[in-house]
Amino acid sequence: MAEAGNYLLAEVMLWLMYAALLTAIVVTVVCAVRSFRHRSESIAASNRVPRRQIAWGVLVFTIVLLAGACLLGSAQPLIINGVSYTNTFWLKTTDGLIVTSLILFVIAACFVAFGVSGLNRKLKR
Image (cartoon, rainbow, N blue to C red; front, side, top):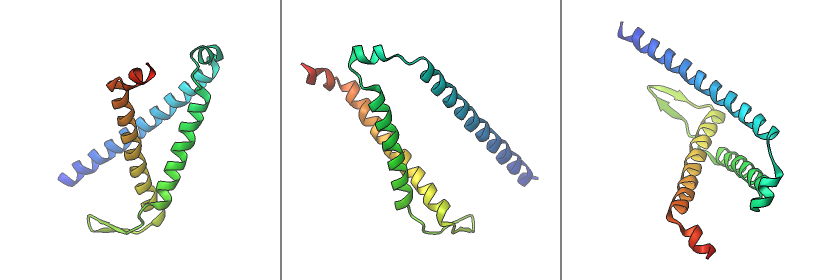
């Protein structure tokens, strides 16, 4: 009977993950469309912030980082719970996603630390 409970819990968790993924995709698309419709060039021009270049730079950097991490990822077979996983594509993809997320977390933490430290204001003086 305990196995049936574990199976049901796993099934519930999978459906919650699917719901979270679907919600994230819908919110991303809605925000992108809304941002595209309501963009204003005068705000960027008045603050001298190159919004478009920053957005494209972040997008290209993320794609290059993800592709590089997936290509350089490990394809060593894994044995989990007695089951051997040997599919090279999924092993490399999983490794690439994990490495990319860790690198992006470290970069984000560095930028947060830089913003909190106040060095930006000190360097502009």
